[in-house]
Length: 197
Image 1 (tube, rainbow, N blue to C red):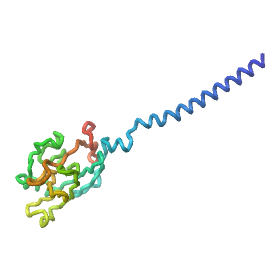
Image 2: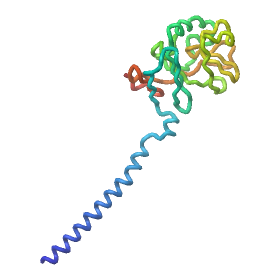
Image 3: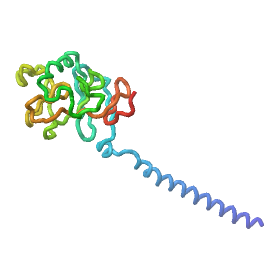
Image 4: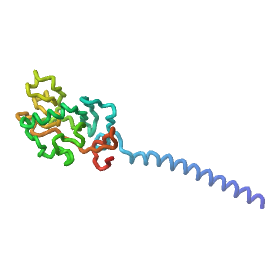
């Protein structure tokens, strides 16, 4: 009888060892599988929302973040920048943003949720070039009525500080305002507007 107990004990140890080895192997296989559910860098570039921290963005400054492999500009506009928008209403093609290049909540005179913070996709609507920032001080180059904005050096399109295209530009419509929302006063989620603060 004591020999039977030794055999059963050995079998039990073998079963436990095999079960433990199987469990470790199962976990080892499950970790990469579960990780595959997380969005990859490629998936994020393909459209996953990105968070921009604007806590250090000073008035008059612009920062660029990448979303969907495109540059997205975030501008903290000053009072004089905002005041300049009304001065160019008669010079832009779509002063009231009637062409749907922005979410409904940004269809206003500032094309933004908060007047002082502008969020724009930095791609010209003509042929996809990236316009360059041209401050108000560049009147000699841009014209006496220039109030600041962007100039596309590829074909000469001009946009104001709300991303509205100037009349006579090759670009047919305003710059795009992506979907976005504020997660807090200093964090913007770009690409999704369903998770607001």
